[in-house]
Length: 457
View (tube, one colour):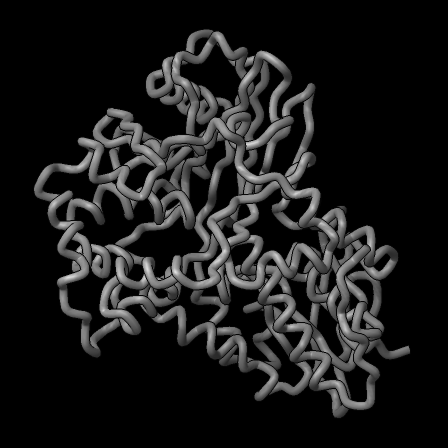
C-alpha cells in the first residue's frame, strides 16, 4: 500500500506536520530513528524537580501560535509566567544587574551608561537604511540604538536565544519583525508602538505542568501507531509517481515525503534527489550545546531569583551564556522549599566545551553559578545534557538558503522540508511552519478529501 505522506523525523516539526495531515484525512506515517518521538523537547521529572532538556517555553506572542494550541486542545491548560518574574538580569564583567521588566527599565537602570541611554531616545529620529548588504543583528542594533546597547543587551540576547554570535547572525533571518519595522515605520520604537495599538497578542511565555514535553506527548498520543520509532532512513528515491524510501526496516512507498530532520541529515538524504537543497541544508551549522540542571534548597541561594534568569555578555573567563530560574518561571519545577536552575553553555561562543569532561563541566558551571547567585553548598540534584548539535545558526545568506529548501517541491514534486532552521527556532515557529507545510502537501495531492481542522474538544 502506498502512503499519502511519509514524514521523516519525529520531533515537534514532524509530529505536527503528520497530525495536521492526519486531520485532513490523509494516510500518513512518521519515521523516527530514536527510541522515542519528541526530538529535543524532553521534560523529565526527578524527585519532585522538572528538568527541561531542550526548550523551556512556548512563545504565544508569535502570530498564529495560540491557534496551534487550540488545535491541540492545550491552550486552557497552559500556564503563563509566575508572579515572581519581575526583573530581567544581565551580567557584564562579573557583575549581575537587575533591570525592571517595565518598558522604561533600561532608562531607569545604571546598567547602561548615560550616553547609551540617551542614544536609545534618539532611535526614532535616525533615518531608515536604504538598500545595502545584509546586516548582522549586531550591526543593525548598533546603527539603530548604539554600540553599547548592541554589546551589552543584544549580544547576550542572541547568545541566549540562538546560542550564537550577534555579529554573525542575520537580522532579516533571525529577527525579521525588527527588520520589517524599520522598513515599514522607519523606526523600531514607532513600530512597537503601532503594534501595541493593534491587535497583537501580549508577550506570553507558556508552559504546562509537565513541561514543554506536553506538546510532543499530545501529538504522539493522537498519532498512535502511525509513528514508527527506531527506524533509520537510508535513501529516498523519486519515482514517476511518488517515492520509495529505503530504511533499516525495509522499503516504504509514499506519494509525498516530508523531511523534518536536522539540516545535516537532510543534506545527506537530499544529495541524490535535490543537490541544490542538499548544499543549502549542509551550509547550516548547529554548534553543540550543554544544558546543566541544578536543584537547591531555597536557603542555599542568596539571590532572590525574581526573574526569568540572566544572560551574560562575552567574557573569556566565563562559560555560562545564560541561566534560567525555572522554579520562579513556573509552578511544579521544584519541591516545596527548593529551587530549580538551568544553565546553558557552549554554542558559537564556546564550542570546545563539547570536548570537556562532563563532570568537570558540571563543577565549573556550579562554581560560576555559586559566584553569581550566592549559592552555598552542594546541589540536592544535578543533571546535564549534552547536545552534539544545538540550535541552527541563521547566518548571513540564510534567507536564500531557506528559499531553496522551501522550494524543493518545485524541483522534486512531492518532496517537502520543514524544521526549526527555516522560519524560526522556537516551538511556536515549528508548529506554524509544520501547519504551512502540511497545507502545501495536501494541496499538491489531488483527488483527496480535505477535512477542515477544528478545535480539539
